[in-house]
Length: 218
Image (cartoon, rainbow, N blue to C red; front, top):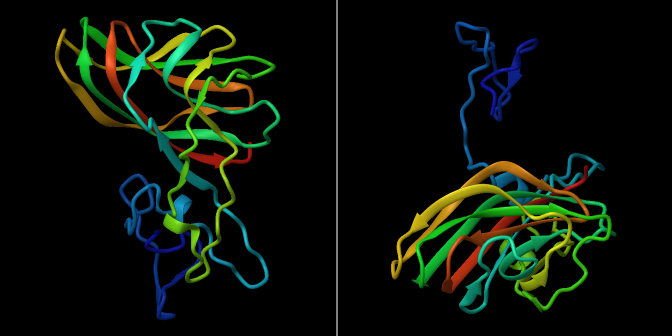
């Protein structure tokens, strides 16, 4: 939160007033009380009669080990987050998780993206366990219960558009393990009709993947 308003004294929680604090380049000094995802997960408190929703944060991933598709094959298996064309919200991808327990070839792991005017319509193996990151969705201290996710998550589907490698995250040698949580820092926004999928360049049979995303109006 800002230490003070740059044009008018900032009223603190105990109604005391303090002058603005600036750096050498007239930049405002900030102190950070929460992590980047806190506001999106918790929601925006009601102010008087006006309530606004800052966004809704969701997570989901494979329920069991999958075989990760090699390269950019459109008949895809792994973990794919997609936004149906009929939706009105964007999916802002925050984090991606990868866990690999078995590789049959040296592998480079990363993300592929694509879009089409119809969106993904063939959901061969839907992942139904999409979770609201506000556990239980309970209301507390003015928080707003988030609606259900508009996204679809698949362990198998048919990719559409022109799949392209968008970002590589790491690599593993043959018969090795690999994993981690990667912060994408809102680098990918998936509009209606778009998708983002975890991909690998070699053979992987013991694969688990996950995405964390926020759903926001364009």
